[in-house]
Length: 190
Image (cartoon, rainbow, N blue to C red; front, side):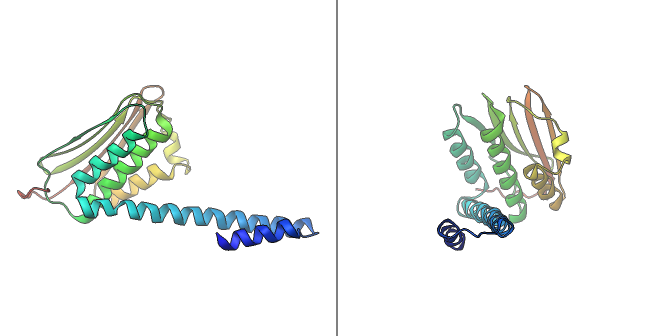
């Protein structure tokens, strides 16, 4: 960013006489800005996952929901099973990131008046459900390459051997369900 500011200052004080040279410099600055923004977002997401390490999955999800609720005109309800099994860090990270993306999509795009996050465990299946009653969207956007968030959710779930189902209807909201099979373990996540 510092380098870009210096380049912009130099352009302001002494613009190149050649329009092609100006175009090249501006395109480079735009590309560098996009890369910087992408790197910053990635770094911020990594910092947010520190909550997962510090608090554990249940408390991190509660904090995520509370943070989103503070930015909405309504509260997002959270229903998190008290008897979750001990799961791998990789699966915890997957669940947290899907919840993070799903909730952020509600905050930014859904125009919803109700939303809920549910994390439950039954018969060796860990299930995360995120639903809202908002605008909904055409499921075609999932495959058009433009929706990186949904594509990222799919990749995360597949990476841990799970499945992701998304249903959405215009003016009827969206429902995201991630199901991941986990080993039966009587120990409880605190």
